Image (tube, rainbow, N blue to C red; front, side, top):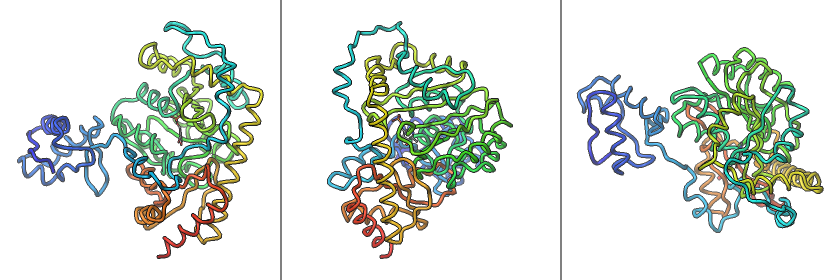
Length: 435
Ligand SMILES: Cc1ncc(COP(=O)(O)O)c(C=O)c1O
Protein backbone atom coordinates (compact mmCIF):
# COMPACT_ATOMS: atom_id res chain seq x y z
CA UNK A 1 0.00 0.00 0.00
CA UNK A 2 1.25 3.54 -0.67
CA UNK A 3 2.91 5.51 2.14
CA UNK A 4 0.88 8.58 1.25
CA UNK A 5 -2.89 8.26 1.19
CA UNK A 6 -4.96 8.11 -1.96
CA UNK A 7 -7.38 11.01 -1.89
CA UNK A 8 -10.49 12.22 -3.74
CA UNK A 9 -14.23 11.82 -3.74
CA UNK A 10 -14.90 11.43 -7.48
CA UNK A 11 -13.54 8.79 -9.84
CA UNK A 12 -11.50 11.45 -11.65
CA UNK A 13 -9.96 12.75 -8.41
CA UNK A 14 -9.14 9.30 -7.08
CA UNK A 15 -7.59 8.27 -10.37
CA UNK A 16 -5.56 11.52 -10.53
CA UNK A 17 -4.36 10.96 -6.97
CA UNK A 18 -3.10 7.44 -7.85
CA UNK A 19 -1.37 8.85 -10.95
CA UNK A 20 0.33 11.48 -8.79
CA UNK A 21 1.54 8.79 -6.42
CA UNK A 22 2.93 6.79 -9.36
CA UNK A 23 4.61 9.96 -10.67
CA UNK A 24 6.21 10.72 -7.29
CA UNK A 25 7.36 7.14 -6.73
CA UNK A 26 4.94 6.57 -3.85
CA UNK A 27 3.51 3.69 -5.85
CA UNK A 28 5.84 1.55 -7.94
CA UNK A 29 5.28 -0.94 -10.78
CA UNK A 30 3.74 -4.12 -9.42
CA UNK A 31 2.44 -2.43 -6.22
CA UNK A 32 -1.17 -3.27 -5.43
CA UNK A 33 -3.72 -0.51 -4.94
CA UNK A 34 -6.18 -1.04 -2.07
CA UNK A 35 -9.16 -3.34 -2.62
CA UNK A 36 -12.20 -1.37 -3.84
CA UNK A 37 -14.24 -1.96 -0.71
CA UNK A 38 -11.41 -0.85 1.57
CA UNK A 39 -10.62 2.36 -0.30
CA UNK A 40 -14.29 3.24 -0.64
CA UNK A 41 -14.71 2.94 3.15
CA UNK A 42 -11.57 4.96 3.76
CA UNK A 43 -12.63 7.79 1.44
CA UNK A 44 -16.30 7.65 2.41
CA UNK A 45 -17.44 7.11 -1.19
CA UNK A 46 -19.52 4.48 -2.93
CA UNK A 47 -17.69 1.35 -4.15
CA UNK A 48 -18.77 2.15 -7.71
CA UNK A 49 -16.81 5.41 -7.54
CA UNK A 50 -13.59 3.59 -6.69
CA UNK A 51 -14.33 0.91 -9.31
CA UNK A 52 -14.81 3.68 -11.89
CA UNK A 53 -11.50 5.27 -10.80
CA UNK A 54 -9.70 1.93 -11.26
CA UNK A 55 -11.28 1.56 -14.69
CA UNK A 56 -9.93 5.00 -15.63
CA UNK A 57 -6.48 3.92 -14.44
CA UNK A 58 -6.68 0.71 -16.46
CA UNK A 59 -7.79 2.64 -19.55
CA UNK A 60 -4.83 4.97 -19.07
CA UNK A 61 -2.47 1.97 -18.88
CA UNK A 62 -1.44 3.02 -15.34
CA UNK A 63 -2.90 0.04 -13.51
CA UNK A 64 -4.17 -3.38 -14.45
CA UNK A 65 -6.61 -5.80 -12.95
CA UNK A 66 -5.21 -9.22 -12.17
CA UNK A 67 -8.41 -11.08 -11.40
CA UNK A 68 -8.53 -12.20 -7.81
CA UNK A 69 -5.11 -10.64 -7.16
CA UNK A 70 -6.78 -7.23 -7.42
CA UNK A 71 -5.50 -4.14 -9.22
CA UNK A 72 -1.78 -3.41 -9.43
CA UNK A 73 0.34 -0.64 -10.92
CA UNK A 74 1.45 -1.62 -14.43
CA UNK A 75 5.05 -2.77 -14.89
CA UNK A 76 6.63 -1.51 -18.10
CA UNK A 77 8.63 -4.69 -18.73
CA UNK A 78 8.10 -7.99 -16.97
CA UNK A 79 11.47 -9.08 -18.38
CA UNK A 80 13.58 -6.25 -16.97
CA UNK A 81 16.66 -7.71 -15.32
CA UNK A 82 16.15 -11.18 -16.77
CA UNK A 83 19.45 -11.27 -18.68
CA UNK A 84 21.49 -10.40 -15.58
CA UNK A 85 19.57 -12.89 -13.44
CA UNK A 86 20.23 -15.64 -15.98
CA UNK A 87 23.97 -15.05 -16.31
CA UNK A 88 25.83 -18.35 -16.03
CA UNK A 89 22.78 -20.50 -16.76
CA UNK A 90 22.20 -22.50 -19.95
CA UNK A 91 19.97 -20.12 -21.90
CA UNK A 92 16.76 -21.86 -22.89
CA UNK A 93 14.71 -18.75 -22.21
CA UNK A 94 15.67 -15.81 -24.38
CA UNK A 95 13.94 -16.90 -27.61
CA UNK A 96 16.99 -15.94 -29.67
CA UNK A 97 17.91 -17.60 -32.97
CA UNK A 98 21.13 -19.59 -33.33
CA UNK A 99 23.84 -17.17 -34.60
CA UNK A 100 25.30 -20.07 -36.63
CA UNK A 101 22.06 -20.32 -38.62
CA UNK A 102 21.91 -16.64 -39.57
CA UNK A 103 23.20 -15.33 -42.90
CA UNK A 104 26.60 -13.67 -43.35
CA UNK A 105 25.99 -9.98 -42.65
CA UNK A 106 29.58 -8.90 -43.39
CA UNK A 107 29.43 -10.28 -46.90
CA UNK A 108 26.09 -8.57 -47.54
CA UNK A 109 27.42 -5.27 -46.19
CA UNK A 110 30.34 -5.37 -48.59
CA UNK A 111 27.95 -5.80 -51.53
CA UNK A 112 25.63 -3.00 -50.46
CA UNK A 113 26.89 0.13 -52.26
CA UNK A 114 25.00 2.37 -49.85
CA UNK A 115 24.03 5.93 -50.77
CA UNK A 116 22.92 8.32 -47.99
CA UNK A 117 19.18 8.98 -47.94
CA UNK A 118 17.52 12.10 -46.57
CA UNK A 119 14.10 12.64 -45.06
CA UNK A 120 11.70 13.12 -47.91
CA UNK A 121 13.06 10.22 -49.93
CA UNK A 122 10.97 7.08 -50.25
CA UNK A 123 10.30 5.58 -46.80
CA UNK A 124 10.23 1.99 -48.07
CA UNK A 125 13.24 0.39 -49.74
CA UNK A 126 11.90 -0.74 -53.14
CA UNK A 127 13.72 -4.08 -52.94
CA UNK A 128 12.09 -4.83 -49.62
CA UNK A 129 8.67 -4.01 -51.04
CA UNK A 130 9.45 -6.31 -53.96
CA UNK A 131 10.45 -9.13 -51.61
CA UNK A 132 7.22 -8.73 -49.65
CA UNK A 133 5.12 -8.65 -52.81
CA UNK A 134 6.80 -11.83 -54.06
CA UNK A 135 6.48 -13.55 -50.69
CA UNK A 136 2.77 -12.63 -50.40
CA UNK A 137 1.77 -13.12 -54.01
CA UNK A 138 0.60 -16.71 -53.68
CA UNK A 139 -1.70 -15.99 -50.73
CA UNK A 140 -2.87 -12.39 -51.10
CA UNK A 141 -5.39 -12.00 -53.85
CA UNK A 142 -6.56 -8.57 -52.69
CA UNK A 143 -4.90 -5.21 -53.45
CA UNK A 144 -2.36 -4.21 -50.83
CA UNK A 145 0.33 -1.67 -49.95
CA UNK A 146 3.70 -2.37 -48.36
CA UNK A 147 5.05 -0.48 -45.32
CA UNK A 148 8.10 -0.98 -43.10
CA UNK A 149 8.34 -0.72 -39.31
CA UNK A 150 10.94 -1.32 -36.60
CA UNK A 151 9.94 -4.97 -36.20
CA UNK A 152 6.72 -6.83 -35.56
CA UNK A 153 6.12 -5.51 -32.07
CA UNK A 154 6.43 -1.97 -33.38
CA UNK A 155 4.08 -2.74 -36.29
CA UNK A 156 1.44 -4.24 -34.01
CA UNK A 157 1.62 -1.31 -31.63
CA UNK A 158 1.38 1.31 -34.37
CA UNK A 159 -1.48 -0.51 -36.06
CA UNK A 160 -3.48 -0.89 -32.86
CA UNK A 161 -2.86 2.67 -31.72
CA UNK A 162 -3.73 4.04 -35.17
CA UNK A 163 -7.05 2.22 -35.22
CA UNK A 164 -8.33 1.84 -31.65
CA UNK A 165 -8.95 3.97 -28.63
CA UNK A 166 -8.18 3.22 -24.99
CA UNK A 167 -10.47 0.69 -23.43
CA UNK A 168 -11.13 -1.10 -26.72
CA UNK A 169 -11.24 -4.88 -26.67
CA UNK A 170 -8.56 -6.78 -28.61
CA UNK A 171 -8.90 -10.53 -29.22
CA UNK A 172 -5.54 -12.17 -28.55
CA UNK A 173 -4.37 -15.75 -28.42
CA UNK A 174 -4.42 -17.47 -25.05
CA UNK A 175 -1.59 -18.04 -24.31
CA UNK A 176 -0.15 -15.13 -26.23
CA UNK A 177 3.27 -13.70 -27.23
CA UNK A 178 4.16 -11.64 -24.15
CA UNK A 179 5.14 -8.54 -26.12
CA UNK A 180 1.72 -8.49 -27.81
CA UNK A 181 -0.03 -8.90 -24.48
CA UNK A 182 2.19 -6.07 -23.22
CA UNK A 183 1.27 -3.82 -26.13
CA UNK A 184 -2.41 -4.35 -25.43
CA UNK A 185 -1.95 -3.75 -21.71
CA UNK A 186 0.38 -0.76 -21.83
CA UNK A 187 -1.79 1.10 -24.32
CA UNK A 188 -4.85 0.72 -22.12
CA UNK A 189 -6.67 -1.72 -24.42
CA UNK A 190 -8.44 -4.72 -22.94
CA UNK A 191 -7.45 -8.25 -23.95
CA UNK A 192 -10.11 -10.81 -24.89
CA UNK A 193 -8.22 -14.10 -24.54
CA UNK A 194 -9.08 -16.66 -27.23
CA UNK A 195 -7.83 -20.18 -26.40
CA UNK A 196 -5.37 -21.86 -28.75
CA UNK A 197 -5.45 -25.61 -29.39
CA UNK A 198 -3.25 -27.78 -31.59
CA UNK A 199 -4.60 -26.11 -34.78
CA UNK A 200 -4.62 -22.47 -33.66
CA UNK A 201 -7.22 -20.07 -32.28
CA UNK A 202 -10.59 -21.61 -31.37
CA UNK A 203 -13.21 -20.40 -33.86
CA UNK A 204 -16.10 -20.50 -31.36
CA UNK A 205 -14.11 -18.59 -28.77
CA UNK A 206 -13.10 -16.05 -31.42
CA UNK A 207 -16.73 -15.62 -32.32
CA UNK A 208 -17.56 -15.03 -28.66
CA UNK A 209 -14.83 -12.38 -28.39
CA UNK A 210 -16.14 -10.63 -31.51
CA UNK A 211 -19.69 -10.81 -30.23
CA UNK A 212 -18.43 -9.25 -27.00
CA UNK A 213 -17.26 -6.26 -29.05
CA UNK A 214 -13.60 -6.94 -29.92
CA UNK A 215 -12.46 -4.26 -32.38
CA UNK A 216 -9.25 -5.98 -33.40
CA UNK A 217 -7.89 -9.52 -33.60
CA UNK A 218 -4.20 -10.24 -33.26
CA UNK A 219 -3.02 -13.70 -34.22
CA UNK A 220 0.09 -15.63 -35.19
CA UNK A 221 -0.56 -17.77 -38.26
CA UNK A 222 2.63 -19.80 -37.78
CA UNK A 223 5.00 -20.78 -34.97
CA UNK A 224 2.71 -19.33 -32.33
CA UNK A 225 4.61 -18.08 -29.32
CA UNK A 226 4.75 -19.83 -26.88
CA UNK A 227 3.14 -23.11 -28.11
CA UNK A 228 4.66 -23.42 -31.60
CA UNK A 229 1.26 -24.11 -33.19
CA UNK A 230 0.65 -23.13 -36.83
CA UNK A 231 -2.83 -22.69 -38.29
CA UNK A 232 -4.01 -25.66 -40.29
CA UNK A 233 -5.75 -24.96 -43.62
CA UNK A 234 -9.07 -26.10 -42.11
CA UNK A 235 -8.74 -23.93 -39.03
CA UNK A 236 -7.74 -20.90 -41.09
CA UNK A 237 -10.88 -21.41 -43.19
CA UNK A 238 -13.01 -21.60 -40.03
CA UNK A 239 -11.46 -18.40 -38.68
CA UNK A 240 -12.04 -16.67 -42.02
CA UNK A 241 -15.67 -17.60 -41.87
CA UNK A 242 -16.03 -16.25 -38.30
CA UNK A 243 -14.22 -13.03 -39.21
CA UNK A 244 -16.28 -12.60 -42.37
CA UNK A 245 -19.29 -11.88 -40.13
CA UNK A 246 -17.35 -8.94 -38.63
CA UNK A 247 -15.81 -7.15 -41.63
CA UNK A 248 -15.28 -3.94 -39.64
CA UNK A 249 -12.84 -5.62 -37.21
CA UNK A 250 -9.12 -4.94 -37.71
CA UNK A 251 -7.26 -8.23 -38.30
CA UNK A 252 -3.52 -8.36 -37.64
CA UNK A 253 -1.50 -11.43 -38.57
CA UNK A 254 1.98 -11.58 -37.03
CA UNK A 255 3.88 -14.01 -39.29
CA UNK A 256 7.18 -13.66 -37.44
CA UNK A 257 8.78 -16.96 -38.48
CA UNK A 258 7.83 -16.83 -42.17
CA UNK A 259 11.06 -17.61 -44.07
CA UNK A 260 12.12 -20.40 -41.73
CA UNK A 261 8.73 -21.83 -40.86
CA UNK A 262 8.23 -25.53 -41.54
CA UNK A 263 4.52 -25.04 -42.31
CA UNK A 264 2.71 -23.23 -45.11
CA UNK A 265 1.02 -19.90 -44.43
CA UNK A 266 -2.76 -20.19 -44.27
CA UNK A 267 -4.51 -16.88 -44.27
CA UNK A 268 -6.99 -16.22 -41.47
CA UNK A 269 -8.15 -12.87 -42.84
CA UNK A 270 -11.19 -13.10 -45.13
CA UNK A 271 -11.35 -10.94 -48.28
CA UNK A 272 -14.24 -8.90 -46.82
CA UNK A 273 -12.16 -7.60 -43.91
CA UNK A 274 -11.72 -3.91 -44.59
CA UNK A 275 -8.73 -3.17 -42.38
CA UNK A 276 -6.03 -5.78 -42.08
CA UNK A 277 -2.28 -6.25 -41.98
CA UNK A 278 0.07 -9.16 -42.54
CA UNK A 279 3.32 -8.47 -40.68
CA UNK A 280 6.51 -10.29 -41.68
CA UNK A 281 9.46 -9.46 -39.46
CA UNK A 282 13.01 -10.66 -39.96
CA UNK A 283 14.48 -10.87 -36.44
CA UNK A 284 14.11 -14.66 -36.32
CA UNK A 285 15.96 -15.39 -39.54
CA UNK A 286 18.26 -12.41 -40.11
CA UNK A 287 18.93 -11.69 -36.42
CA UNK A 288 17.33 -9.36 -33.87
CA UNK A 289 19.84 -6.59 -34.55
CA UNK A 290 18.51 -6.27 -38.11
CA UNK A 291 15.00 -6.06 -36.78
CA UNK A 292 12.56 -4.59 -39.27
CA UNK A 293 9.10 -5.78 -40.26
CA UNK A 294 7.55 -5.55 -43.68
CA UNK A 295 3.82 -5.01 -43.53
CA UNK A 296 1.30 -5.79 -46.27
CA UNK A 297 -2.02 -4.11 -45.59
CA UNK A 298 -5.07 -2.58 -47.19
CA UNK A 299 -4.46 0.89 -48.56
CA UNK A 300 -6.27 2.76 -45.78
CA UNK A 301 -4.33 0.93 -43.07
CA UNK A 302 -1.07 1.65 -44.93
CA UNK A 303 -2.01 5.35 -44.96
CA UNK A 304 -2.64 5.31 -41.22
CA UNK A 305 0.66 3.56 -40.67
CA UNK A 306 2.46 6.04 -42.92
CA UNK A 307 1.05 8.90 -40.86
CA UNK A 308 2.92 7.40 -37.92
CA UNK A 309 6.08 6.71 -39.90
CA UNK A 310 6.61 10.19 -41.24
CA UNK A 311 10.22 11.33 -41.21
CA UNK A 312 11.48 12.07 -37.75
CA UNK A 313 11.62 9.78 -34.80
CA UNK A 314 10.08 6.82 -36.59
CA UNK A 315 12.07 6.79 -39.84
CA UNK A 316 13.27 3.22 -40.44
CA UNK A 317 16.90 3.45 -41.55
CA UNK A 318 17.22 2.89 -45.29
CA UNK A 319 20.68 1.46 -44.67
CA UNK A 320 19.07 -1.20 -42.50
CA UNK A 321 16.31 -1.78 -45.02
CA UNK A 322 18.81 -2.09 -47.86
CA UNK A 323 20.93 -4.54 -45.89
CA UNK A 324 17.87 -6.61 -45.03
CA UNK A 325 16.78 -6.61 -48.69
CA UNK A 326 20.28 -7.66 -49.75
CA UNK A 327 20.16 -10.61 -47.34
CA UNK A 328 16.64 -11.62 -48.36
CA UNK A 329 17.39 -11.47 -52.06
CA UNK A 330 20.94 -12.80 -52.08
CA UNK A 331 21.70 -15.88 -54.18
CA UNK A 332 22.23 -18.06 -51.15
CA UNK A 333 19.20 -16.82 -49.16
CA UNK A 334 17.05 -19.84 -49.94
CA UNK A 335 19.85 -22.23 -48.93
CA UNK A 336 20.53 -20.31 -45.71
CA UNK A 337 16.84 -20.33 -44.76
CA UNK A 338 16.51 -24.02 -45.64
CA UNK A 339 19.40 -24.84 -43.35
CA UNK A 340 17.89 -22.78 -40.53
CA UNK A 341 14.43 -24.30 -41.07
CA UNK A 342 15.80 -27.83 -40.89
CA UNK A 343 18.11 -26.98 -38.00
CA UNK A 344 15.28 -25.60 -35.85
CA UNK A 345 12.88 -28.38 -36.82
CA UNK A 346 15.47 -31.01 -35.87
CA UNK A 347 16.19 -29.33 -32.55
CA UNK A 348 12.59 -28.92 -31.42
CA UNK A 349 11.78 -32.45 -32.58
CA UNK A 350 14.79 -33.80 -30.67
CA UNK A 351 13.80 -31.92 -27.54
CA UNK A 352 10.21 -33.14 -27.76
CA UNK A 353 11.42 -36.72 -28.29
CA UNK A 354 13.74 -36.51 -25.29
CA UNK A 355 10.98 -35.01 -23.16
CA UNK A 356 8.60 -37.80 -24.22
CA UNK A 357 11.27 -40.36 -23.37
CA UNK A 358 11.58 -38.78 -19.93
CA UNK A 359 7.80 -38.87 -19.50
CA UNK A 360 7.15 -35.13 -20.03
CA UNK A 361 4.28 -34.34 -22.38
CA UNK A 362 4.44 -31.60 -25.03
CA UNK A 363 0.99 -31.68 -26.63
CA UNK A 364 1.43 -29.05 -29.34
CA UNK A 365 2.81 -29.75 -32.83
CA UNK A 366 5.78 -27.42 -32.94
CA UNK A 367 6.93 -24.93 -35.56
CA UNK A 368 9.53 -22.35 -34.60
CA UNK A 369 12.22 -23.04 -32.03
CA UNK A 370 10.29 -23.00 -28.77
CA UNK A 371 8.66 -25.94 -27.02
CA UNK A 372 5.76 -25.44 -24.62
CA UNK A 373 5.62 -27.72 -21.58
CA UNK A 374 2.32 -27.60 -19.68
CA UNK A 375 2.78 -27.47 -15.92
CA UNK A 376 -0.79 -27.53 -14.61
CA UNK A 377 0.28 -26.95 -11.02
CA UNK A 378 1.97 -23.67 -12.06
CA UNK A 379 5.50 -23.20 -13.43
CA UNK A 380 7.15 -21.06 -10.72
CA UNK A 381 8.55 -23.93 -8.62
CA UNK A 382 9.74 -25.84 -11.71
CA UNK A 383 11.40 -22.74 -13.17
CA UNK A 384 13.12 -22.17 -9.80
CA UNK A 385 14.31 -25.78 -9.52
CA UNK A 386 15.64 -25.70 -13.09
CA UNK A 387 17.56 -22.51 -12.26
CA UNK A 388 19.15 -24.30 -9.31
CA UNK A 389 20.23 -27.00 -11.73
CA UNK A 390 21.73 -24.45 -14.14
CA UNK A 391 18.98 -24.02 -16.76
CA UNK A 392 16.99 -20.89 -17.54
CA UNK A 393 13.56 -21.38 -19.10
CA UNK A 394 10.77 -18.85 -19.44
CA UNK A 395 7.93 -18.88 -16.94
CA UNK A 396 4.76 -19.27 -19.01
CA UNK A 397 2.81 -16.87 -16.79
CA UNK A 398 4.32 -14.13 -18.95
CA UNK A 399 2.30 -15.44 -21.87
CA UNK A 400 -1.03 -15.40 -20.07
CA UNK A 401 -3.19 -12.42 -20.99
CA UNK A 402 -5.50 -11.12 -18.25
CA UNK A 403 -8.45 -13.51 -17.96
CA UNK A 404 -6.44 -16.41 -19.38
CA UNK A 405 -7.91 -19.88 -19.00
CA UNK A 406 -4.86 -21.64 -20.51
CA UNK A 407 -3.06 -24.42 -18.69
CA UNK A 408 0.06 -22.88 -17.13
CA UNK A 409 3.38 -24.00 -18.50
CA UNK A 410 6.88 -23.06 -19.41
CA UNK A 411 8.55 -22.17 -22.69
CA UNK A 412 11.83 -23.81 -23.62
CA UNK A 413 13.88 -22.29 -26.45
CA UNK A 414 15.62 -25.09 -28.33
CA UNK A 415 17.28 -22.96 -31.02
CA UNK A 416 20.79 -23.95 -29.97
CA UNK A 417 20.10 -27.14 -28.07
CA UNK A 418 22.15 -30.19 -29.07
CA UNK A 419 20.68 -33.68 -28.66
CA UNK A 420 22.84 -34.65 -25.64
CA UNK A 421 21.98 -31.36 -23.97
CA UNK A 422 18.29 -31.89 -24.75
CA UNK A 423 18.47 -35.31 -23.07
CA UNK A 424 20.19 -33.86 -20.03
CA UNK A 425 17.58 -31.10 -19.80
CA UNK A 426 14.63 -33.48 -20.27
CA UNK A 427 15.88 -35.75 -17.49
CA UNK A 428 16.44 -32.78 -15.21
CA UNK A 429 12.95 -31.42 -15.92
CA UNK A 430 11.34 -34.83 -15.32
CA UNK A 431 13.25 -35.23 -12.05
CA UNK A 432 12.25 -31.72 -10.97
CA UNK A 433 8.62 -32.41 -11.57
CA UNK A 434 8.53 -35.78 -9.86
CA UNK A 435 10.29 -34.52 -6.73
C1 LIG B 1 4.94 -14.02 -32.07
C2 LIG B 1 6.14 -13.13 -32.27
N1 LIG B 1 6.01 -12.04 -33.01
C3 LIG B 1 7.07 -11.24 -33.26
C4 LIG B 1 8.32 -11.49 -32.72
C5 LIG B 1 9.49 -10.61 -33.05
O1 LIG B 1 9.13 -9.32 -33.20
P1 LIG B 1 10.16 -8.18 -33.61
O2 LIG B 1 10.21 -8.12 -35.08
O3 LIG B 1 9.52 -6.97 -33.02
O4 LIG B 1 11.49 -8.51 -32.99
C6 LIG B 1 8.48 -12.59 -31.91
C7 LIG B 1 9.78 -12.82 -31.27
O5 LIG B 1 9.95 -13.48 -30.31
C8 LIG B 1 7.37 -13.44 -31.69
O6 LIG B 1 7.51 -14.53 -30.93
